[in-house]
Amino acid sequence: MSFRRFPQYRRFRGGGSSRGQQHTLIASGLGVSAAGYYFYHLHPNAAGRYRFIDVSQQQEVRAGDEAFRELLRQYSASILPSHHPTTVYVRDIAKRIIRASGALHPHTKEYNWQVYVVHSSTKNAMVLPGGKIFVFDGLLPITKTADGLANVIGHECAHQYLRHSGERMSFMKVFIGLAIALQAVGIDFGLSNALMKVVLELPNSRKAEYEADQVGMDVAARACFDPAEAVRVWQRMSQAESSGGSGGAMDFLSTHPGHENRIERLREFLPKAKKIFDDSECQQMSSFRRSTFSAFM
Image 1 (tube, rainbow, N blue to C red):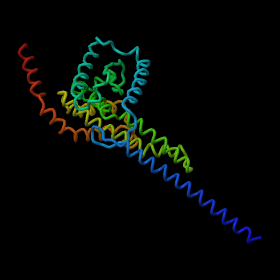
Image 2 (image 1 turned 45 degrees about the horizontal axis):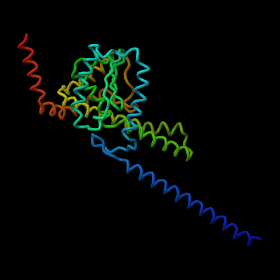
Image 3 (image 1 turned 90 degrees about the vertical axis):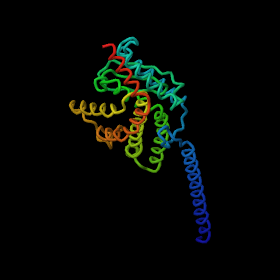
Image 4 (image 1 turned 135 degrees about the vertical axis):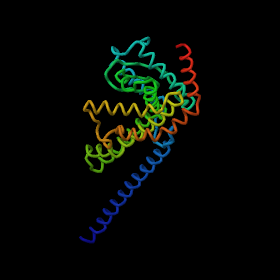
C-alpha cells in the first residue's frame, strides 16, 4: 500500500512545484513588463527631472476643462467682470508671463489662456491644464505689488509648463497598482495607503512645488518682474498665517513645503533669476519708464 501511495505523493509534489513555477514565471513576466512600461514612460520635464508620465497633453487639457466647469459653477457669482480694474490689472500681468514663457515652453502656445478674478477672502491662485488662470483677490494684499503677483502667477503657470498635472494623473495609476499589490499579499489597505502617501505622494508633491518655484521665478524675471519679490511674498504669507494662528502642518506631512524651507529654497534660486533679469532689457525699460514718468511731473 505504501509503495502505491509513494508515486502518488511524488506526482502530487511534482504537480504543485510545476504550478508554483508557472506562477513565478507569470509574476516575473508581469513584473518585467510593468518595469519596462514604467521606464519607457520616464521623460524629463522642463526642469530636467525624469518622471513617469503616460498621459497625453490632450488628456490633461480635458481634465482641466472639467475642473474649469466645476470652478465656474462654484464661483460664477463671485467672478469679477472683465472690465473691472482688478481683472484688468491681473490680466495685464498674466499676459506678460504668458508671452515671456511661450518660447521656452512651446506646448503651452496651444492653450486657450483666460484670466478670471474671484472676489473672495481666499489667498490663492491656480492655473488649470489648458490655460485657465484663477486669482482670488484675497491674495492681493499678500502679493502687494505687480512683481509679487507676477511671481505667484509664474509659479502657478510653471506647474503647467512642467506638466505636473499629467505627472500626478500618471502617478495615481502607480499608486492604485501598488495599493492593490500590497493588499494582495495581505497588507492592510488602509495602512499601505497611508505608507505610500508619506513615502511617495507627499515628497513628490513638494518636489513639484520647488520646481514650480524655480521655473516660475525665472519666467517672471524674463517678463521683467523682480524675482526677489517671490521671497517677500512668502515672507508676508508666513506672517499672515502666523498672525492668524493658522500655522501649516509639519513640512514632512504636507504636500507643500513649509514656509521657512520654501523661503530658503527661493533664496537659492534667486541668483539665477536675478541674472536673467539683469541680462535682459528689463533694467533699461524700468529706467525709461521712470524717466518718462518724471518728465511729465
